[in-house]
Amino acid sequence: MADITDIKAIMYTEKSLALQEDGVIVVQTTPRMTKNGLKEVFKEFFNINPLKINSMRVNGKVKRFKGIEGKRPDTKKFYVTLPEGAKIESLAV
Image (cartoon, rainbow, N blue to C red; front, side, top):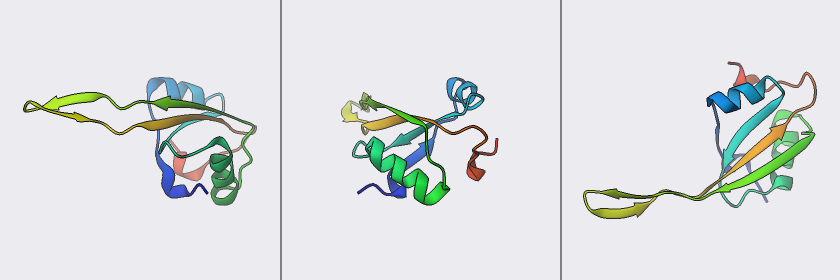
């Protein structure tokens, strides 16, 4: 069962801001989040029924710090298409 705590961030990059003008927001989540789970979160917490959801897995980079190798965590990115005129209050940019 997905929860709102699985959502890590709303992405604010040049590409995502351009997509927001077309009604698409980019959400970064934990890898266990599913499309249906994200749809339930949007219905329950934002009262919005997304039209379309596309997902993409993002593997964490392997980085070195002072000779010790570490790995950044894996995430998932979702492109969520919102209905015409739907806004999320926390996304007022």
